Image (cartoon, rainbow, N blue to C red; front, top):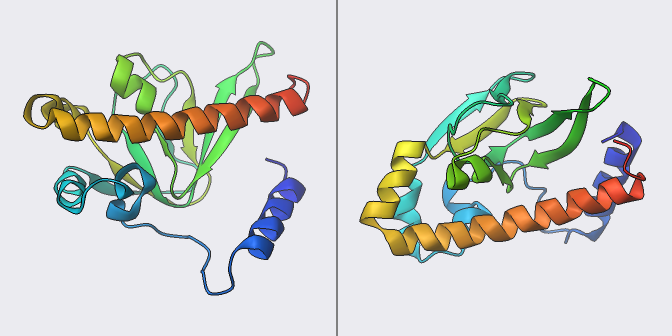
Length: 173
């Protein structure tokens, strides 16, 4: 996102956010939108399966073509999702911030990452490793379904926003 567009977005968010509500910079995993709507007991139980990691600015979190490595709710910072275009250049698809997540498709479908995920600045993510995710299927299928519904809704909203952004640019990223 160009810096002037990012500044404009920040101005709009600051203008419309209630004065008593601080800007979201860090979320505990229990408050992440992927878990927040779950029942309190389920949320606490599931939160224990996530491993919190801090990733340095510029570090690759998930490489394009890598196998299923986890589900990544973002707790703090920004993650840039990029792809290689037909021109062999790297293009930004979208940036995700606290409250968003990535890695859903590889976790659900078992396909490799189609894009690269890189920390734009220091990032804190909670990782649900594949083996923990698979255990949900066996031990708590209702909890897994509730999590998947939340993730699907969030992923759909992000895909819709990315598609609109590409359409505004005329398909040129």
